[in-house]
Structures are given as C-alpha cells and as structure tokens.
View 1 (cartoon, rainbow, N blue to C red):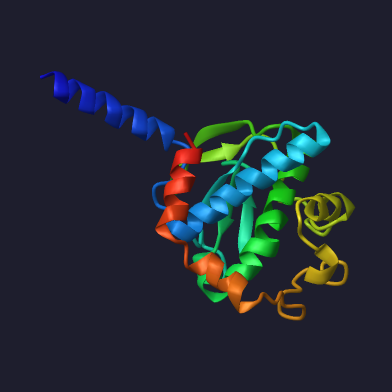
View 2 (view 1 turned 135 degrees about the vertical axis):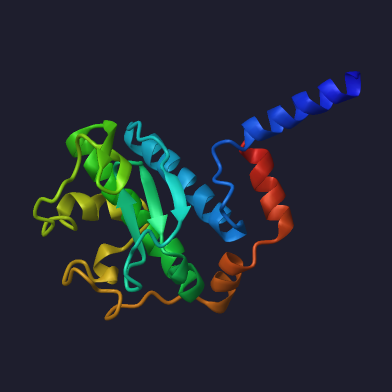
Length: 200
C-alpha cells in the first residue's frame, strides 16, 4: 500500500515538472521550445522587461506552405509550420523563432498582456483576444519596432530581406552548414533527458 502511494506521488511530481512542455512536441520541438524560453529570458534580463515565455506549437495552423511561422497573441504562442522544420530547420532556428517572438513582444508593448475571452461563434467556442492586433493595416508589421526587437533576439531582418520586402525568404535564403542542420534534426536522447531535468 505504501509503495502505491509513493509511486502515485512520484508520478504526480514528475508530471508537474513537465507541465510547461507541450507533450506533442518531438525532440526537435523540445529544442525549439527551450530556445524560445532562453531567448525570452535573455531579452528580459538585458532589457528589464517581464515578457512571459510563450508556448511553442509545431502545427500548420492553416498556414500556407510558404509561411514558416506565426505569432498568436490570443494564445501567447509561437506557431511553427512543421513542413518548414523538415524543409529548413536552420531557417526556423536562426530566424523564425526570433521573428515571431519579436512580433509577440511588440504586440505586448502596444496592447499589454493578452486579455482573452471565450466567445461562441458559428465555428464553435473560440478563445479571442479582447485586445491586441486585429485586422488593422499590417503594412507596418515589420517596421522599426519589430526590426529592433528581432535583431536583439538574434534575427537579421535585413538579411531576411524585410528591409526590402514583406515576403523575402524566397529571395534571401538563410544558409546553414551541414553540421548545424544535423544538430537541429538529430537530437540525442541525452539532450532530451537533460532538457527534462532542467525544466523541473
């Protein structure tokens, strides 16, 4: 009887330690999730800000195949298109994570933390931001405030082409070495174990 209670308690503690991790993430997703956490913490430490660490989701979220990722203010989530994780993990690591994180930080500065509500829609109940970017003109989406934050987070907006174009990846591809690409696509199990112990 004592063993059963101890095992149950240990199981619950283990689950609590992993509660901030999305169980649907594969090893590469866990690496990207840790990167988002490090980038947010580093930015906060360097600038005295208090941005919460967003969730990372590897899902297409109805994104066109040409779109690498999206910042979701309502859910405070960075969505990464899994097609791009397979196609170009280096682009995701070097540019897309910082790119989408910069959008969230700019939105937070402009609108404050997301205030959301559950609303009944014709497509069912949806979580909707009651503040934040709406359907306004998105021509300034990659403006000076976003570019400054993206640079601070490690992206290079001009190298990405955003100093010249709204959709630059086709014209200005990010190139990684084979070693960098291998590190992003082949995560050893020891790295996963280390990630699990550090998250507790």
